[in-house]
Image (cartoon, rainbow, N blue to C red; front, top):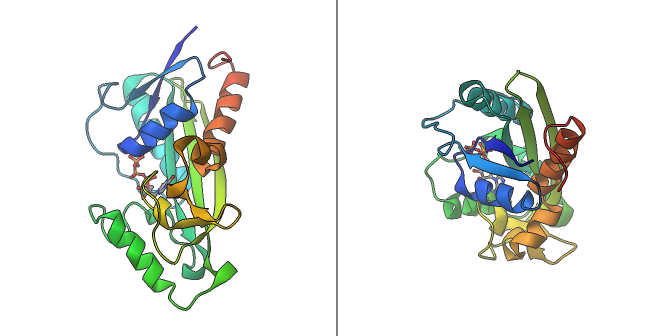
Length: 203
Ligand code: ITT
């Protein structure tokens, strides 16, 4: 039986990836807008998990369907894990990513090799209409590139360099990125957990 779930995000790039990652599952994914919610959700948590739960709780409470949310970001080790949970707000919410990316590269001037280590983090929360909650986190390791490269993906992908592959996230196809990304891993793990809990059937 096909199950309707909501993905509580205002980010169209995340929504696209979410749908691609779950394309073989027997679920229909509604955006917040399709579920009838317009407006902003204040993300005042201090961890990825807290913020993911805040978003999922807000929408599950209003729309009465199983709701998933993702809080994600980039941790740069040399910058004490900045921008971290503030990744969307780094240098201002509306500042173009080209500017944010250039700023991070600039702040790593003179830093070489493994000292440029960074990771993408994704916490995925699921909140059921009866209030039951699940949350988990997955990561993707890489380094900050010396210059942006690639047109695919979004956000910090053009400066996220994968030493094993010799390219950035933005040079991967969407399928390649989803196989190894923080979001792909977190969502597939959440899907397994939800299937075990009987929330929806296997594909
Ligand atoms: P919602 O809260 O509405 O889901 P958002 O864009 O504000 O959308 P976050 O608060 O989780 O989402 O911020 C995550 C930011 O981290 C996002 O805006 C990107 O800048 C960056 N980010 C997250 N995942 C990424 C990915 O896979 N590739 C590149 N950048 C990513």
